Length: 253
Image (cartoon, rainbow, N blue to C red; front, side, top):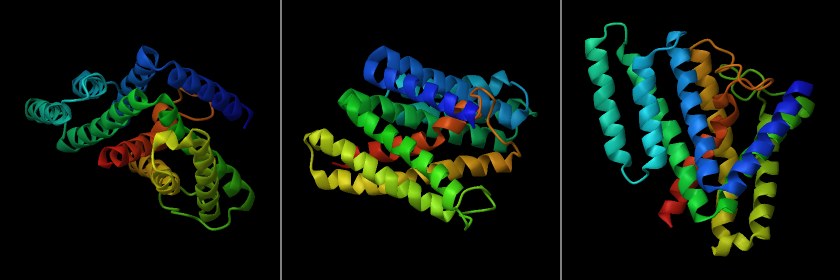
């Protein structure tokens, strides 16, 4: 527990510094998440490093981060490249490239939207990240104290319905108060009421999706990079889902 708390404090500090600094500092932090997250996915698939899978996935994620206006072209080129690799390398199966393609699209779009939200307003990106941190933290704490009924035991045996409700409630309160302080960023308050209600749910679904992937490949954590937390994707899984969801909501305005 002590190790987990120390790691959490360090992660929060690094996140705050990256978001407040913005620009190249944030891009560097997002690039690290993408590149190391790619490494974790490749290791999950093959149990050893595979350059043929790493390069197309990492390249697609970096292009989605640094060239955000060519999303469709980037993912189509990656798909063709991965299929070509599978044709000429009998050790790489279709399921491998399917997972790489899916995960690179998910991670890449998460980083892409994080960058575009920050370009609009760095405090708005802070809103989404705060929502996830509060939701995750209180889902864990409330579940630890009051959890009795399993949420989805086949995917994540320790998560409880009580924890999920607690995470949702505190996530909504914290994020709505945050947007109120910033006067809803000059937008309609109803938008942030809706997003603050939905984001904690999306955040927890993201966490469950990545837990489902780990259970499929029989791993506890994506890596041991962060003491007490696991890998980079163990820490930022729910953020990826929430950032994509909020980015889509913004694009619909």
